[in-house]
Length: 99
Image (cartoon, rainbow, N blue to C red; front, top):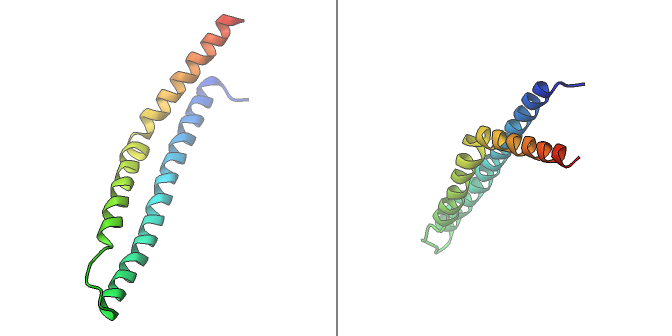
């Protein structure tokens, strides 16, 4: 059985690892898809009459989303985990008062 402090540390570490894993998966998918789109756009420009580099739009748009994921889901993950722990502790205290 875990003590309260061991549980807090384990839950904090798990939440942090989960947040960072989510960002890494997002970054990997971004890299793979954008590589494919850049290749596709380059081939279309090279072998057809297309001249417009449309790949810039999904790159910038998705890049903004990835940046937000990094800032709020990776960098701020410790703050989010601590906030969640405080909310759980408040919930437990309210439940104790009702009993």
